[in-house]
Length: 589
Ligand code: ASP
Image (cartoon, rainbow, N blue to C red; front, top):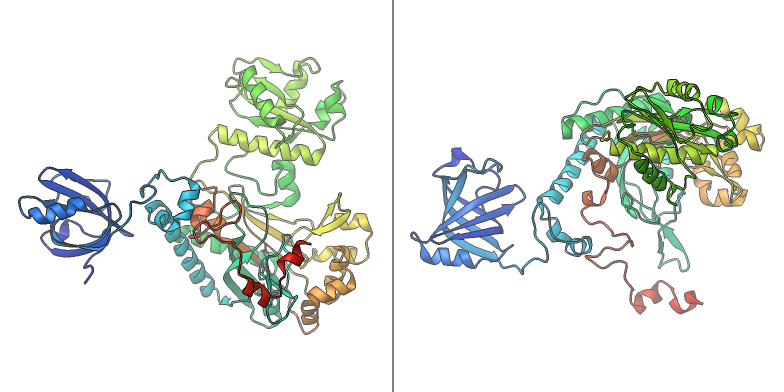
């Protein structure tokens, strides 16, 4: 028998019992006649004691053990004289009578502890060692618990888990496809799904009624900290539902996940119109852990002789509470430079300081009287001690810049607290987005999203400008400024779907070629339906207050899209290429 107990479970109640444990040698300490070893497994760490006086030979062997050796020991549980209150097993230790080395280990390339000395690349290459660290293991276990809790909740709501294929034809979700050559059909390729979108809609036509899947999706995009080429969604679709019913169901899922895994009760989620989110926070995924919403000043700040404001489409600002005294002119200058970096690209930054002593100072004091500035202050409901930060320019750009500033101020002021969760639904997204450069429409969500019922006639007959104003039954779940999920009510009518493809610039042939199967299915009794997908990796990260999804994925790719451990992607041999009818020489020409 390898073990009677694991390394996390022995307590005072086990005193005097003989136990067998197996695990990894984490650390070893020698004190002359005694050797102490920390034995680690997934469940915890238990202290082992080897006593020179009792068994010199055994103690010698223990001293020779290297870090990460795999061992099995037999011994008696005893009370520790020097207890460790920070460890679950800290009241006891094991007096060892037998030691067996199950496997030796090379010295690991980095320390396997809470904070490691290993750099990112090294940790990725030796991911199996990184995964031995409690912190990383806890993340993977959290993920497992979250998946199990999701399945349980959805099963209780009568969702059916259906697997959809990975070797498919392209489904446009706005990214590049990964493709797989077909050996049996030379010159032809499968695409890996960017999401199971079309399949889940087909399942609704089939009458499955409520579908879910915790599923891998593949998107060939440039990588960032919160992106991976393969990632996981909790993907769902429902028939005969309104937007409201979908939001309620998945608000229920989210609340239940927070309750079961973090023991946090979330209040009801506010619903915010997309237009309001942009107007008040400059973002379709506002972080609502703090307010600091935008106030527009066009009516009070224009036509007073300050040409920068006069020429601007929008003059808009935020009020940083009780920051006036904290920001010296030098600090404001630094903040202005921060805003002027190419990543943000603001031209300048106007401030008004309402000093706690009642003074009013502003970078545009030459153009505006104290009374003018007081009027601005009243719009923000500013108190003595508050600092107004104001931008101006083209509306869309300025809002985006102010959103960056708002988040930066929120961070500096300590308003984005870990453990504070502020979910919301952003609803009523536009259906289409006009791309100035390409001079074409893109689907704001995806091409299967339905316009709002009242907008259908305008969509079928309206002119170009009308199309820009169409609203969709599309929604996002946002938590703490991160987009956790998104979905929509779908088009279930062939003519409307065909019109949407038209607007998106597909020719009739292209639409038929790529999506004929879906439009065909719509002609055989497609029910009204809609759904949503949660980004599962991101949900894990956000629930744990972390920005990167990488540590919640057992085997992630690095920024170049590489798996450093198995060394993928990598070349394949000539025979495989021949079978696939791929001539690399020819491809190069
Ligand atoms: N397929 C969509 C996505 O991947 C989600 C949905 O519309 O249900 O974002």
